[in-house]
Length: 291
Image (cartoon, rainbow, N blue to C red):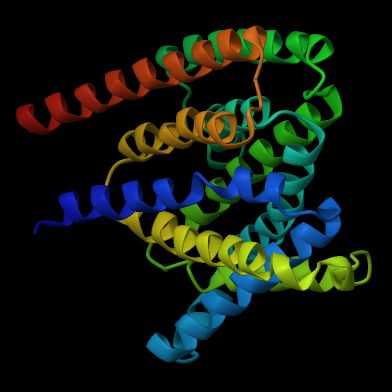
C-alpha cells in the first residue's frame, strides 16, 4: 500500500471516529466543565501511555525541541477541548460543526499574516461565501431553541484557535506532533480540575465517559498522523465528512433538529469548501502532470 492511500485511509478513519464526539457530549449527564475535564484527562492519558510504550520519551523530546511553534501549538490545542464542549453545550450540534468547518478559511488568513503566504483568488471567493453561510447560521440561532449565539461565538473561537495551531505547526513539519497532543490535553485537564465536579458523574456513566475519551484519543492520533501523507486539500475534504455526519447522527439518536437556517447556512459552508478544495486538488494534480 503506497503512502498516499495510507494517508487517506488513516485520515478517513480518524474523521469517522470523531463523528460521535458531539453525541457523547449530549449523552453524558454532567456540566460542560466536568465533561471537558474527563474528555481531556482520558484522551491525554491514553495518548501519553501509548506514546511511552511505542517511542519512550524520544517523541516528547522532539516536540520540546520545536521551540515556540511547538509551545504555541500545545497551548492553543489545550483550549480547544474545553471550547468544543462548551460550544456543543450552548448551541446546536449542527451550528457548532458547521462553524468548525470554517477552520481552513482562518488558516489561510493566519498563513498570510504569520507566514507571508499569498491568498489566492479562489480562497478570497471561498472566504466571502463561507462568511455568508456563517451569517445565516448565526441568524438562525435566534429562531432555534437549541441554538444560541453564545455557543456560535465559542465555536468560532475554537475554529480560529485550531487554525492558528495548524499554522504554528507548519513551521515544524518534519516533527511528529502526536506527542504534543497529550501535553495539550493534560494541561487542559489540570486547569479544569479546579473548576469541574468529577464526583457528580455517576458510576453508570463511566462507559460513556471512557468511550468518549478513547474515541477522542484514537481520532486525534490518526488525524495528526494521516495528513503527513496527503495534501491539505484532501485532508479538508475528508474532514468535511464530520460536518455532515455529526448532525445527522445526533438527529437520528436524540432527535435534535438543526433548523432550516442552520441547514441552509451549513450547506453553503460545506458546499463552498468542497468545491474550493476540489479545485485546489485538480490544480495540484495538473501541476504534477506538467512537471
